[in-house]
Amino acid sequence: MKESSQPVNPIIKKLEELADQYLQGKSVVDLDFSNTKIAFEYKTDQELKRSTWLFGLMNKPWLVKIGSKLTLWAIKLRLPFVVGIIKSTIFKHFCGGTTLLTSQHDIEVLAAHNVLSVLDYGVEAKASEEDFNATMNEGIKEVEFAAQTGSVPVVSSKITGLGRFSLLEKIQSGEKLTDEEEKEYQNIIKRMDSMCNRASELGVCIFFDAEESWIQDPLDSLINMMMKRYNKERAVVYNTFQLYRHDRLQYLIDSYDWAKKEGFILGAKLVRGAYMEKERERAERMGYPSPIHPTKEASDEAFNMAVRFCVDNYETLASCNASHNEYSNRMQAELMVEKGISKDHPHLMFAQLYGMSDNLTFNLAKAGYRVGKYVIYGPVRDVIPYLLRRAQENTAVTGDMSREYGLLLKEMKRRGLKK
Image 1 (cartoon, one colour):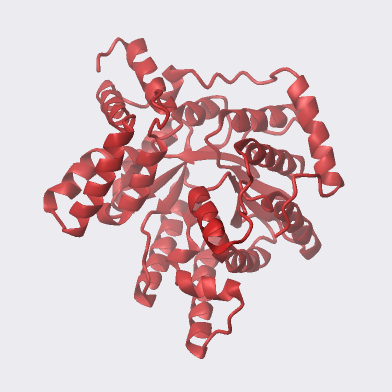
Image 2 (cartoon, one colour):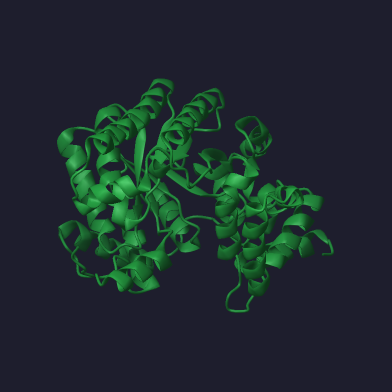
């Protein structure tokens, strides 16, 4: 990969000019992301107290570190009481339920506040063909459930839930596959096609996650195959672009150009990224240049330029701004108003994770924007890796109060509640 922070073509130059204009201008939208009344209106006093207590615990790095290790140890030993504790605390906050049906209550609560749901079966680290088929079948169930629920326009899926990680790694490395491995690869295509075909039939969208850079090339190839097949009339399939990678802004532009040439709508979910420490550690260990931007500022700039590019081309590019960054969300909202684009246009969506950044989600929804929550569900034991990542993300590593905890305390004070 080529690393460069310089503009690579006239489109990027134009985007930089737009950025300058934006930074020099004034806000054109009335969005107050510090409004905790709107952010937590959906929570009862008891729920607010429980969330504040939970984030107070996660505000202690030492406790999260020890708790994570003890949780993994206890789950490995299959201690029965641990699942119950997790289910009533961190699982309850960050997940919709153990099944689609038990998630329905939270989906309905979100819908009552004009917030959409993105369904995500949070089971990870499976490795057998039987497991992959089970994940595909669950994905089809999600699509059918979404089609019957007006507030669930999207389901989300990981390709490593449909095929073996090491097989994808081998494909990217350029090694020759055995006959059995070629059959495995064909099975991944069949599983993806079954899910995408059902989504196309029922008017639902599928977001496929980005994953580690050393398997991303075959993932891109598979997703592009599905987009070319199913995105002729509308955006059914979306790829995910991790903008903390220094090559992904250009890849987004190239993907759009290719989609236009091939006559289909590009679906693009924009994220900063999820594997930074792992990516940098592997690059250093194996002696190749890190695929990650050297600074947070560079990642932020790439992400925001990607947002502007998607808004500029919204008629032929469907995107989801899946960011927890206040500036990036406000910027897209302002660009839409400046360009006279309908706030609920189907090609421009916002999304955040369930249990996080309610100040962004609910204030955007209140203002009329098309915004959703990622509603993760699945058996408690299987979603524990996801839950531990959420706990670590919300830990105040600097010793200061985490943003989420601060907002919850502010709302507790506004309501006159005590911790």
